[in-house]
Image (cartoon, rainbow, N blue to C red; front, side, top):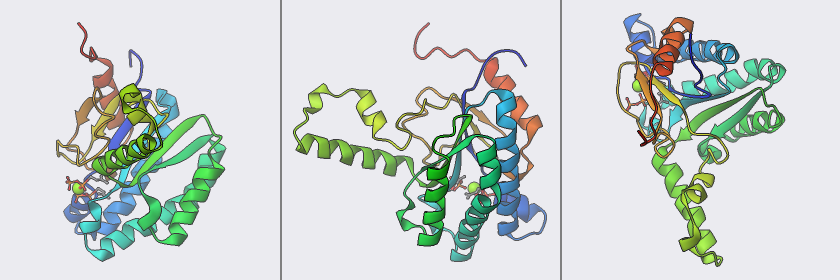
Length: 233
Ligand code: IPE
Ligand code: IPE
Ligand code: MG
């Protein structure tokens, strides 16, 4: 594969439910297979020089799903931390969370916070889990933080784009270079609305549980063949 990057890959991991339905399985088993796909992709990242991997795990709108499915998703996150933390630590992966953990069950919240804290110094790879994440919610939160700074006496006239960017969950991270969405839909579903301003997009009909190295290479090859102009010539 020729060329460089992406240093930061973002993924909308969609299609777990349909993957399960096609097999006559409950949706929860699709989500379980989705966790396996995530584990595979995390492991592939170093070989492709992907230093930042940001995945959409649960949106602020996913609370609309039946309670049992939400429960199954939360249980899988709990299990993912339990099963993967040691390996992630060993591989120098830093876990971060984008989103509001306040509405999660306190046991899960504490487990995630402990995982974030115990991996904070790792530098090989940054794995960001967008969990109870919404792009609009993130921007509103950033706007509120800026409003507080103005109340405290800062002059908004002095602010640039960086000031809002720093108030987002992604604060000190580079913007995604490539956004992959599996499962056939071609929309953002409220993911990283600010950060994708100049991100390259790549869609596939493949359902997330079937995503692996072959699809990843396809996406990276497409990315490396593109010319990013950022508004220039
Ligand atoms: C994505 O798969 C996983 C989450 C949203 C948590 P879906 O559950 O949305 O799968 P489909 O889109 O119904 O197939
Ligand atoms: C986006 O998928 C959210 C995640 C992958 C976590 P959805 O399945 O929720 O998106 P829509 O509803 O099809 O837009
Ligand atoms: Mg979906």
